Image (cartoon, rainbow, N blue to C red; front, side):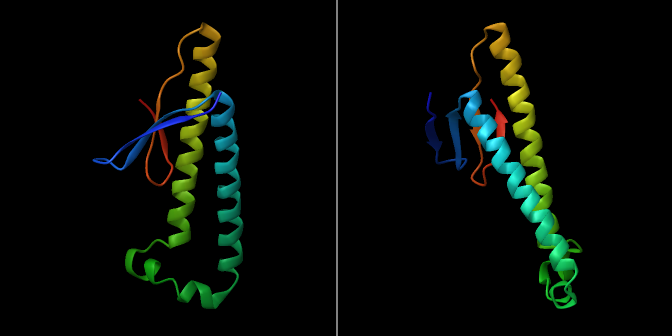
Length: 110
């Protein structure tokens, strides 16, 4: 089963219906992105010149990579919740929910 999409121009979000296999694949992709960001943060922290050049951190107190990691963690958590919910619904024979995905790819169940 493939996904279908409807874009809402007012909220810049997509309403899509994904199969459980697609949700699982996206969940694994999100985990890979998170792992990559954590590895990148580690290598950046070891380079003193990178720590000083993060203007975002100098202004906000949080580095841009820290913000990206936080967003990636939230995305993984959302996909984990959706995947678990879908498994329970499928086991009960209930219909699969629609999923709202924001412009940056963060999912939520409608």
